[in-house]
Amino acid sequence: MQSSRHFGRSADNRMLGGVCAGIGGYLHVSPTLIRIVWVVLTIFTYFVPFILLYIILWALLPEESDPMVIDADYHIRE
Image (cartoon, rainbow, N blue to C red; front, side, top):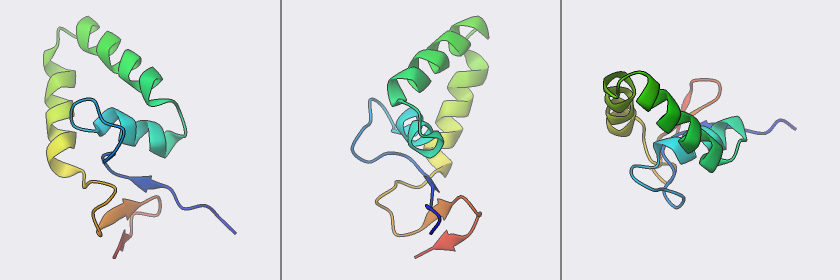
């Protein structure tokens, strides 16, 4: 039986929009590690690219509690 991985914003483990927690959950990595890497990359790229990417992901990714979540096979499940 294969495990299903879902890519969406975290509804319960969020600091701002749940994007980093959602990425961490999808990759099976600690959300804290994702947040630290995200902040470091944001600082080293002069803030704009990763802040824009975060805002775009926040707007486009559904919450994990949303009935329509993108799974690892890029199918929309209900």
